[in-house]
Image 1 (cartoon, one colour):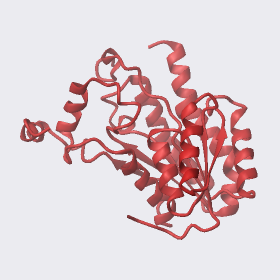
Image 2 (cartoon, chains in turn brown, cyan):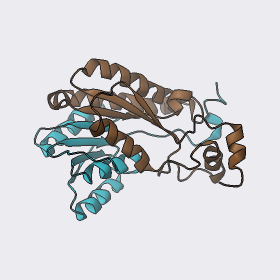
Image 3 (cartoon, each protein chain N blue to C red):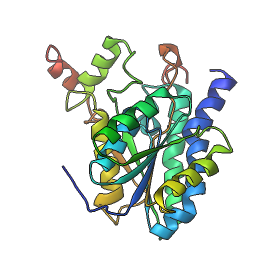
Image 4 (cartoon, each protein chain N blue to C red):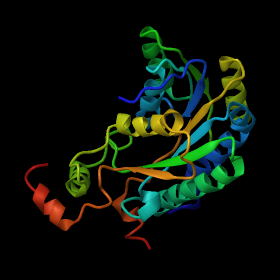
Length: 156
Length: 111
């Protein structure tokens, strides 16, 4: 867990997000707009990912609440915490690793990027009274237990 | 599918060249949105995806930049506002970079 790895993930995942939002503030306030930050279930439960990634995503959830306060009442700020997403990031993962996650997911599949996009669209344009929240879109990964994994055995 | 009347609204999606960001770009664009996305300047996927969406008649503009660079934010927002007629309604921060692939780096195994 090198210092360079820490720096890279902090800059991209957390500090960069803050800087963009800070730069966008005047326009967002004028438009009475909304911000959605992509976090991760790793930022809520601190497992299934690298220590650094989990820390940056927990930071995103914290930043979301602070920004929701700072930009209120004009701008709403929410986060989405995806579970396992079938995306270019996870494409090279070993199949077994993905299958283990899917077995624990109540809805028994990975998220499509579109599932997460639906949530972002809702938080921006489908509601006007939700702010400072983290919407978990993980198909029930958080609540999948060993019994569920066994039930799914042979079906995944 | 949830839809909304988003005429005249503008959205910026960072990390819009692939994955969740790209799906978000498409979600807004297909709802009649005047979309701008940001992608890494050296990410060839961005230009290709924009060309594909433009080919379908969707309004998507690329705003290259790297969110990890301190000076980039002001340029990305300025580029966005130039493209939208100074308007920005929604900001979706998707830009991110994943964990190291090694299983030895999981939060649970390295407390």
